[in-house]
Image (cartoon, rainbow, N blue to C red):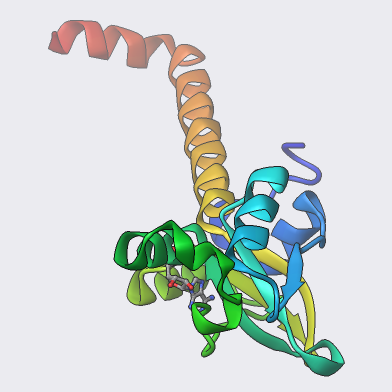
Length: 165
Ligand code: AMP
């Protein structure tokens, strides 16, 4: 991917992330029980579900943290309750043009790990902190590889390193 399609971390935005991971978002309606939500999380191997409202609008978001919080406070009986009572209703969303830095900063400020991406009022994808970390690691590996290649292609630099030791 380097050379042609490779984008550096600071050149990437939410649209680039969705292009590589896909636009699928697991959603549920607000009347589903917390147990239904737990099953969805496990089935899809994910950490949060977007709760869809009427006309494609986002009604809320619920993550594994909300589930643990509810169970920790009220016990397992809470799993029968509707997710609408436990979801976060004020959802912070991202735009396709938001950069990795902006997304990371929003997630750090608000202390959450997921951001639905919305364009023209429609949910078009979801970016998680895992997606951002993946890009960061790939970028760091690329840079260290390029650095290693540069150093080994310059015998004088190798000699300089050895001399300094
Ligand atoms: P998370 O770190 O994503 O598991 O979420 C931690 C808390 O933040 C939970 O109470 C979630 O409901 C809430 N949350 C997660 N993502 C968002 C978001 N994009 N906007 C608002 N709240 C969120």
